[in-house]
Amino acid sequence: MKKISNVSLIEAVKQAQSVLVCTHIQPDGDAIGSALAVMHLLETLGKRVQVSCQDPVPGYLRYLSGWERVLPPSQISGTFDLVLSVDASDQERLGLCAELLKLGKTTAQIDHHATNTQFAQHNEVDSAAAATGMLIMRLINDMGVALSRDMASCLYAAISSDTGNFSFSSVSAETFEQMRVIMDAGLPLAQDARRLHLVETLGHMRLFGAALTSLQLSEDGRLAQMALKQQDFSDLDATREESDGIVNHGLYILGVEMAFLATETPEGIKFSLRSVEPHKVSRVAVKFGGGGHDQAAGCTVHAPLDEALRQVSQAMAEELHR
Ligand SMILES: [Mn+2]
Image (tube, rainbow, N blue to C red):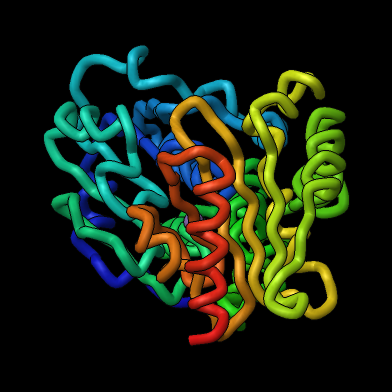
C-alpha cells in the first residue's frame, strides 16, 4: 500500500484534539464513506469529532455506521483544532461548509480530483487514486491504527462507489491490496454490496422508467440522451436524489459511447454527462461552467429544456467527433 505523501497532514491530525470533518455538496459514497471512516479513525484515537455536509446523507448510504452524525453546517459551532475537508476539489464544492473552514486553527484536506485548488494549509491530493477513500485507507495505515469493521464498511462504500464497483480504469493493484485489508477487517461484502449497488427506492425505479421512455439515440447510435421533467418527479412521487445513477444506463446500450441525462429543476437544467474513453465529457461540462472527471461530469444550463438539450447535444457530438 502507498503512503500519505504529505507527512505534515499526519502531524496535524495527530496533534488535533478536536476535529471537524466536512465534505462536498450532494454527497456520494466516496464523500460520506470517507468522512465517516475518518470520523471512526479519529474517535479511535480519542479525539472529539464532528462531521458536516451541506446536504443530507442520501438514503442509499444510511446503513453506514454513524451516518446520523453528519450534521448540516447550521448545527456546527465553536472552534476546532483542525477542520478537515474530504473529497472536495475546491471550497465552492463544499457549499455552506466552506464557511466552517474558518472555525479551524488549522485546515487540511484529502482529495483525489485533478482540478483540486490546494485550498487548505495541509493538502493531500493524489489524482491517481481512484477514490478519496483510498487516501483515507493510507492515512489509517500510516497512523498504525487497526481497521475496525465500521471503518471497513465506510471505506468499501467510498472505494466501490468511485470505481463503479471496481470496474473503472482508475482501479489499481493498490485498490485490491486495500480491499484485502478491508475484507480482513470483517467487511460484510454481500450485505453491503446489495445495499450499495442493487437496492433502489421505488421512486428511483419509476424515474428510470420515465427516463428510458425519453431515450433518444443520435450520431449513428453513439450518443444517448434522456430527459426528466419537473412534472415527472411530481407525477411519480420521486425526489431529485432518486434520479442519481440513471444517466449511466445510457452507456450500457451497445454502440453508445457518450450519454447524458437532462433534469429540469427550478435552478435550471442540470446535465449529467458520461462517456467511455477516449471521449472526455469534462471538456463538455467546462464549456457550460460545470466540471468533474473525464468520463463523468456535470453542468447546469439556464435555458428552456428544448434549447438546453440542443446546446448540450451539439457539444457532446462535437466531443464525440474530436
Ligand atoms: Mn471521490
